[in-house]
Length: 545
Image (cartoon, rainbow, N blue to C red; front, side, top):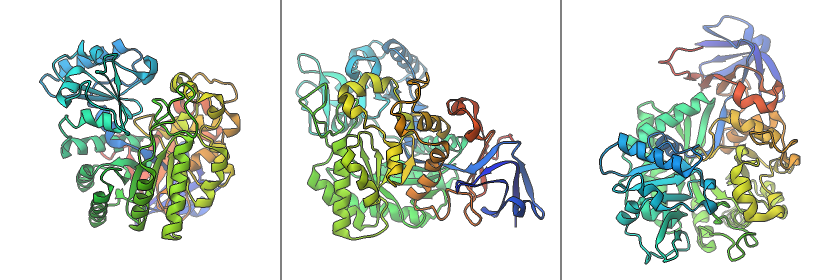
């Protein structure tokens, strides 16, 4: 029986205690402190004064999107339209042919109202279709050839779930907003192959392992993606555990129920540790309740401050949402609901309450992701209904999307009700953290300082934006550890370093609790990651500490 000792550093257990050593045996934590040091060991890890703690989780992300971004034009982080167009030009020259150029991650704040013109991309690539997702993945910018191949013109109507930005003559401008409009373009593009998806998933999960993460929630899985996950697991290419959340479509959810059951059965039949759905149950279903504030599609209780004619764009008719959520819950599936605006969040809570009343009590652990603008009267409902609030701490700061788009959209009163992490924790709500990668940085070490300080990269505003919502460093670590483990129905197995639990560990080069929080992201290094005692970073075929 293999026995490994970790010593010469700080072991933070996540239970309010620390130790100077930890031993693991056959993938589980055996002992702490003196008991860990006693006896013989087959292997030793010198922590070199660093910190060993429960491995991180990510309760909401999109690894396939992140993997594909790396293969397209590298537009994320570029600050002008000219830079983006030049990068598309470069990519097109490096990848000749007549196929589609698809990329993601452009910054919607660099153009007024986030409305980008197809003609700008035409300058770089006039004869091949180009489609770029905005950094939020709720908006698409494409060139004229992409619109031509998709059959879009002035006669193409908006829908309740999609809007086309238009020129004065009614012709599409080149910016597609939300589901139906985005899909109207992408449906004309060739589908990703299973092999393409496997490659993307391998790259994304490797990046997560390097960030100290051992469990992620893929919060947007289409039926056609499941085979790629199964194949990646068979080949041993998943460097983290992944739980799949199948996306429920408001148009075809009834026929999807059979797909959900079949896909859950396929995951269970494979029985692979890295492809899980919780520990005991299997799989999750994702519901998009509304859109986002930046393009005025998040659902609000009162009209938008800069457009009194709209309160947003609900994705589901309310009755359909109740019926679909009730049916999914009856199958024993976990609900994971995207809700940004205060009306969207209330709708999600109302739907969960309805399901609880209709289907009766059980340990269902519904998740509401993002929880951006929260009405004060709805905050206590999270704990009462047993709802997990999954938040992205990197968003709780005054960065350009917040100051240029969100604040003008919602006004000062609603701006003060954003990302109430501290209030949710004080109300006894189960909070888990995630990244929404590739929307924002996947590294927990990048999210930790924002949760603690609520300051942006320039350390503004001093003392933090909404300082009463700041949380402590150990609370933030727990949201990435025990909080995500609870979301995964795995708190008895993971999330804290307790003898008998699975040895999911991350080794940092220093004790982040002792650092200036502002410095964590830039000065702290992940030196090692273990999932069930197996070292996933550095990979076995790479040299390292």
